[in-house]
Length: 419
Length: 167
Image 1 (tube, rainbow over the protein chains, first blue to last red):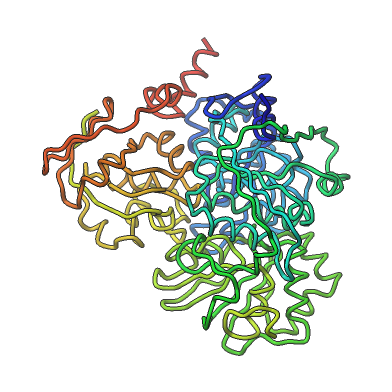
Image 2: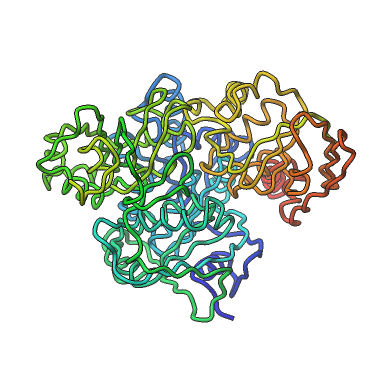
């Protein structure tokens, strides 16, 4: 019987010829990730195990990105604890402020994640790396502690759902719109415990940046992982970023799927998710009059170069509405530098947007754009739960960068076509 | 283990931002996290929940972030176990790894209302609503996960492994 790309990666990392959904396996990991929120607990747990050294100093990545640069004294203490551990363990891939970026933009960019890898990270959006054809999933701090000690994790082999997108994308539609549409169709637990495999000609036409946005939000449908089998675009992307060898896996024609969805992207317009669930989606033409107070363009979902280019394309020769705070956050230092070279940052500043150093800050109501009671934000982030970006009585709407930029200009949720 | 307490009923898709809002993640101290448990879902919960009480919820409990602060804050309040129609997968792993008993039973959730007195036998997966007298059974854990729970969570399981290697 054939296997899916996910099953092949897991079998290879468990030393088996084949695996089936439901099998409990022990997986040898290529990479293990933690951040300033999840690593402190993991480090405490690691110390309880009774060993001094981590399994491999090259395979554990720690990024201080959530409440960094430190937002207050408590955050500074957390970052310090993680920093001391990283230095003591001599981690090759410890990313300090000034070198760091938002982890899920940073790791692919730095060539740390490659096709065919098996990766866990103590951050739910670790599923992002499936965009390069890796198996990658989010876990908690205790799993991170165990993986730091052994380089292994127990995994229940997920069944896969195939999402096939055919046809040609409408203007302004990116990977973010396809994933919001998908979550809107299947719900926030529509892929619970399962692998979401994205395929079809519309997926082939997506940039790697867009694919990363798409797999990033698999967790928002309850998925264990998202994956796009590698193609030439994937191989071009990873070329020159790493000297590590890797394996390219594809799903067999007779692989088994728990469900198959097929959609024509001609029917998909830019999407907006209404409060308070990412599944509460509408096409931009059905949004109506929604006045907003703040726009955030950034995050592990949409802080990449393609996103900034789209935002700049919309914002060029316009100004943000006087009532609106528009905050734009390049996801990594390299993206920031490239955006400067291309003149994007100048366009943002001319448009009266605030541009920040990389941080997850506003996405989770941490810092750099927290909402007051009754305020409403449109963000290119990934979650619009109650209180996600600040006061429990504030509201978050989600979209891609084109709609976000257009809405910052108009002062209400707007299609870039309407400017 | 047998637990007894009052039920606190919540709806579906209770996310980790509702269980412990991100604004409190600047510490990993359980007592501090416990002070804000379920704050954005029910601000009264923390003032009125008693040691041993049971959280009862709909589908997809714990969806959203991977923060282990969520089960930690629930444990810090003294909640004995969580019964839900289903759990989001990272929360499911985190609960097992940190030793917070969780049970899946749609029938039990439908048959329990807030303030009902509940008795839970986690070994048998038996949930008794002492207020109505009805008994429900949760799905048993797969064997591999049971091993981890019986060792008292993943870290204890690992410690045993390390000890064996040293011996």
